[in-house]
Length: 96
Image 1 (cartoon, rainbow, N blue to C red):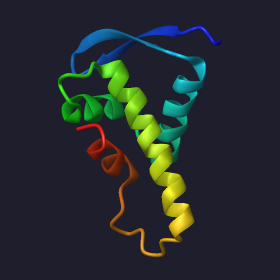
Image 2 (cartoon, one colour; image 1 turned 120 degrees about the vertical axis):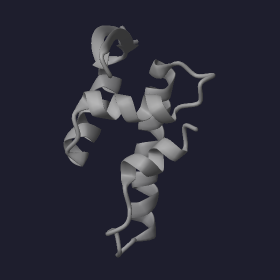
Image 3 (cartoon, rainbow, N blue to C red; image 1 turned 60 degrees about the vertical axis):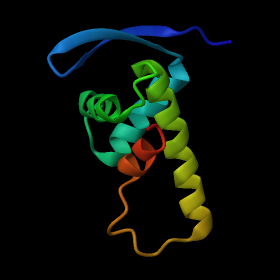
């Protein structure tokens, strides 16, 4: 099993730590690159929209799962008009 990697992250104007497995950090970074968004901004969006009964780390994990699941489902459904589709906000809806 991969060990968790602890990183200090900055959201809003505060620092906090987050422990994710290397594959989870890679997934987050891939989402950020794909969506052209900074990791800090993504974490802020997730934090603002998460269920307050879940911690930020759990919310980030859940967000990544939902993001990738939605991505697979959209490919299978062959959507042609993606002009109004925003993968980040679709995934955020799943963590509320």
